[in-house]
Amino acid sequence: MTKQEFQQRMAQGPLILDGATGSNLLKSGMPRGVCTEQWISAHPDPLIRLQKAYIEAGSHVVYAPTFLANPVSLGSHHLAHETKHLNHELVRISRQAANGKALVAGDISTTGKLMEPMGEMPYDTLFEAYKEQITYLVEAGVDLLVAETMMATDETMVVLDAASEVCDLPVLCSLTIESDGGLFFGGNIYEAVEALEAVGAAAIGCNCSVGPDQLESVISEIYQRVSIPVIAKPNAGMPKITATGEAVYSMEPEEFAKHMEILAKSGASLLGGCCGTDPRYIQALCQKIKL
Image 1 (tube, rainbow, N blue to C red):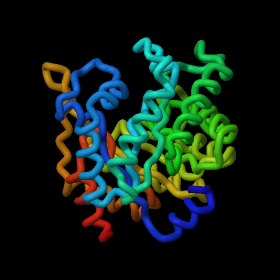
Image 2: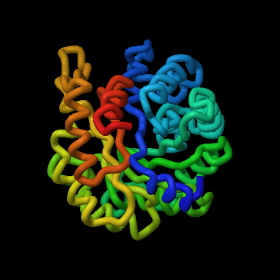
Image 3: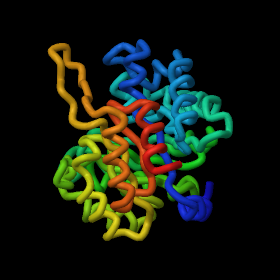
């Protein structure tokens, strides 16, 4: 998909994204603490079932589970040497699940490390890590790229810089925020979206962190500040942490969909779910906005 083709698709109406992956795989037997990317590669069936269910529920896009499949993040599991294999294999699995019925996005995320001068991560190291991952995602045949759950403007810009060196695919940029719009590594979403649009983001918005009930003013303000499509992919409300450390989300699909309808009316045109959501939430969302 070219950037122009993405613009043409967005002119036709909302694009429905998928919901959570990791929390659903935990329910399907994935152990806590493992490298998610490696586990899925060895146990593809739960992901295939989940992504097929998302598509059946109405998702136009599923995210290949390449969230932390960059050499820096994989290095924490001593798997940097598996970067090419994991990106190729995980995209192959998602393409098998989609079977031509949905777009497959190459999923990219933060390394969790602050960039210089605030932290110790050099620009060049991060650029090469993202460039390597994006190269493998493109080789594997993704339709577009998504930089999601990003924590800072500068690291998201590095993704855009790296992508521009490799391909002409549209890059959707989604940051994780506090309920007031603050970014976890400093700054705020409002300054970030303007800067990221200026350097080539195809769509911009937020995911994770909070529920849709806390995002109406944030989405509305983003929509007023940019001319590109706006993303809303929130959690199923705020979690309660159990004694065993499990995050439990209390917002049911119907309530989630009701708030997502408000976000759509506030300007979001790429809509999906993050932590705590599953195909029921996507189905409720599609029914609510009459897709």
